[in-house]
Amino acid sequence: MPLSVIRLDARGWHDRDDLWRDLLAGLGAPGWHGANLDALYDGLVAGENSVRPPLAVEIAGAARLPAALVAYLTRIRAVFDDAARDGAAVALRFVAPLSAAAR
Image 1 (cartoon, rainbow, N blue to C red):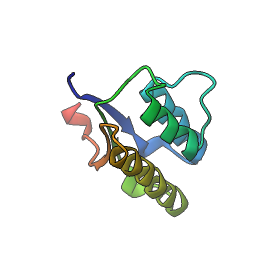
Image 2 (image 1 turned 45 degrees about the vertical axis):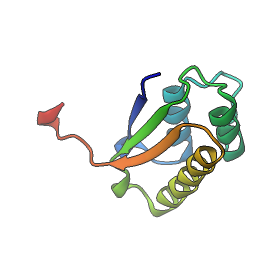
Image 3 (image 1 turned 120 degrees about the vertical axis):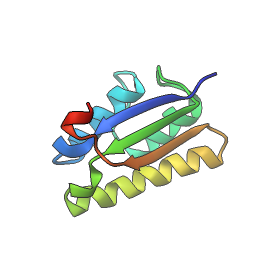
């Protein structure tokens, strides 16, 4: 099965709600999916999302986020790392945003 790459642009994020909106939409999470770390882990490991492993989420533009949101992204990355350690073929990466000319 080919790797699905989900690209998210964090430059418009102001709080956790923005992050969760884009992350859950990118993963194709069901409407009943909770916006919390435990539910994220469960969805990654149990394959509850429409985008199933192997998958990689790439987040661009995180460097300019508020410190509290950057700290929370560190916790989300730990969830991806835990899910990968437990057998799910998932990864979370931080990448530089594309310039307007490169889009």
